[in-house]
Length: 492
Image (cartoon, rainbow, N blue to C red; front, top):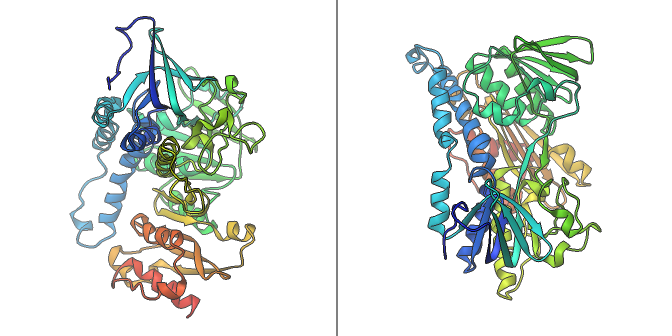
């Protein structure tokens, strides 16, 4: 198989045929291609930007690198003995250098090398789907390459930051999550429009890096999480010097000639900043994919069936005779990298199964479906304190018609917590489906709770009966003892 990494030396139009063509070479697209190649098929990926996608350069990795130094310093300062050894403040330049290294200095040679080693061909340019299992790739120099898929075309193009229609906002050169993740300097004043994950994490990071931060959270901080989680994070942000304005909305934005940004709120107040970060949601990258050729609406989300085939306008029948798939953020099931990669594994495997005429396992928790998207989505928000959750909140479980029992426990009451950090504050909640006797939701808020989450994910995915969980004894003295305390509260 010839590796295609450049179109510049070829004729104006060339053609290639593969078993599978993937548009989008982020983590999702890479995983789809890898699975089909491992399954014995050939694959090509098309990418218009950097191979590795949003997560590698502007989201997961660089943003967590920005936050990690702050978390490590906080942890040291909360333990007597270690606290006395800390003699300086956060080294901002070192933090930014480490961030740059995790973003590979915004170069993708390493990711391209991996594609080559995996036997996956790369075509750089804008990919557009045609109605004949085809993808047309237009490179930056105008070179056009036609790719044909024998079995499937997979759209894994992800999302971009949503820019709300606020007068003056676009003209004020606002930051999106990309600029926040890759900034070369720390602004003296930062205004954040939004209160979700990106807004909360970047407010945490930039306050620690030295910015005076104002958060404008119309719907509250982390509004989709359990209420106590948003409350604890809000308290922590305020303790760090962040001005958190709840229930307010930006109605206009203006940047002056000297660079100062003025954000006018619906209550008449005006916030001044050097930069304004907009973090209010995402929009699908489907505007320029040629979807109209398939009778689909450009610019919209791509609904899919249980095996992630794109559905037609009727919402029930697969589009394009079933050869078009969508994985990752673009299908709007779950906008998280790890869930997108989970979908990618299912998509890759089901394409191979269908190509070989093998049985498709599309029942609940089957090999070729992404059941966890509906029942067991884990997520960590790297604020201070961390928020780790999986499954349903109490409110979501009740809205789903489940007969639930909610159990809460103060993490600070555990022996392991008192050893972990002086002044530890945190909270845990377990949501139980009473009719089945299994956990359907679990939330932890507190310092360094991220690594506790997978145990809850396994319990929910495995539908482990609470009677059996009594035999999973947590080691003492660890914060995991919260499992025992919650089970004691539930009763045997």
